[in-house]
Image (tube, rainbow, N blue to C red; front, side):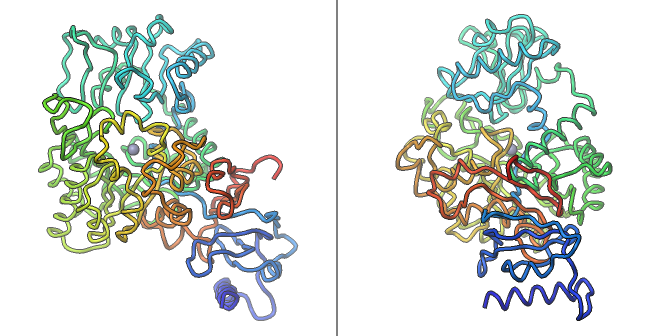
Length: 567
Ligand SMILES: [Zn+2]
């Protein structure tokens, strides 16, 4: 049955590329002797692939594909290695992530001591930097779950320092930065967020959510050239991890223009789609710009600006996510128990209806269970008002969910866009205390959501995570254990998913999430030649070995964009 199907593929492709009966079109590239996971459920593995131009033109056994080798064909021996479709990261902040590669990268530090060491090393290595910026501290590094300027004042007293938490939702400034930003005990902030102050009313150096802008606005802005260079580095790094497409979960016209510039210079080595930020400050002019970009880019295989990103709440660690019931680690009458909407629900609903009717795909960041519920409500309402169409609205993160809301994803056609690395057990201490025992089974409920029939989509949320690496994501999706094996039985183990489902969430389902499933997410004829060769067979190794897998080769559009030495 399988070989008949393959012969049919070859036949169709032969017709499609206009050959006559006497000759078969030579392939530009063939990959032989591999274990190729096509992503098709009825014929999951083949040995070989042929590529012409930027597309896959045939798949099958070595013998069949060898017939397509001509004098100019490049032949790659896969040495029995596993090949999968390129990873498609469905939720990233690619420019901020790329900028971090040239700032103090604290994402891989695991405690306060390591963080301080990395920060100091960076400051010493970059004496010319007027500001020391960086990202990656975790709430659990600090007593009480929140940082204080005292931890960095003694390290770097003479230069301003501003460090974002790994999730980007909180920041830490030293005294020098507070002074330059003019922040004193009298400074007030009225938007979504907070200047954290101690019992005496003095700013501690910690900032929540939007209040971070009080400091970040005085940091000299990167030039366009610096940003373009950062993106070039970011793409290189992503290629080494097998990422061939990324969906940007925020952005503005300025950021879009950077990708457009790279595209025009023929320098994009990844495919991007963008969701533009919309909130209370968005103007009609902004929306007109977004509509223009959407209409111009809707069918581009490289760069689409077809989506809108809302944010209804914050994060659990700082008690800014909107929960139905009180947080477990603070008194019930604590000020932080107040439901902190980033956009008031009624206003959010109006914006959802309006932008949905303008033809955008909608993303909503919702982490708390009430935030998730309101997002589902708004999408349901928009469909009722604007009528049916293939709209694929998405909810980003969904860290807590009520049982009643789980079936609504499949029913309403809403895509759950989740990040397996956010549930790394090494990083959930502060998070778990805030959520409490009783709600734990509803944490990052991947398997329950899959069981309901929804299309689960994965990404990393880089740089709001400890690693951009999809392999680390797969490891956690399947194990819910740290790479060193903790906890032994897995953290909320009933929500682990199979490797096949996790891979799908990072490939085909991610392609569905950007309306690209007819050209990406599978390795079959007619699809774009975006693929990854892995050092280990993810399907046959013990699941705790997954994280050791390295990418050997990454191909985008039929071109090699990364090759590990020795392969
Ligand atoms: Zn995000």
